[in-house]
Length: 47
Image 1 (cartoon, helix red, strand yellow):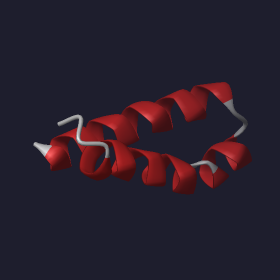
Image 2 (tube, rainbow, N blue to C red):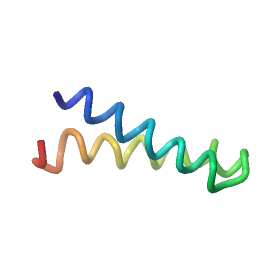
Image 3 (cartoon, helix red, strand yellow):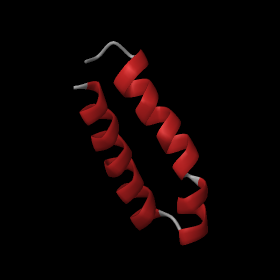
Image 4 (tube, rainbow, N blue to C red):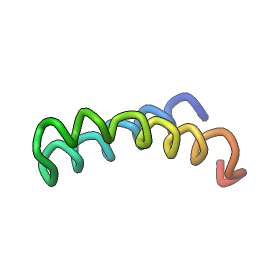
């Protein structure tokens, strides 16, 4: 379950960044998106 939540949030936030930001900023934003997705899936105790 946690793995699925991680990938869903990572892909969703990545797509939002791709459409909202220029390509270079979207690539740079991938690292913080990964950290946020990891926190939501594994550390937040929401799931």
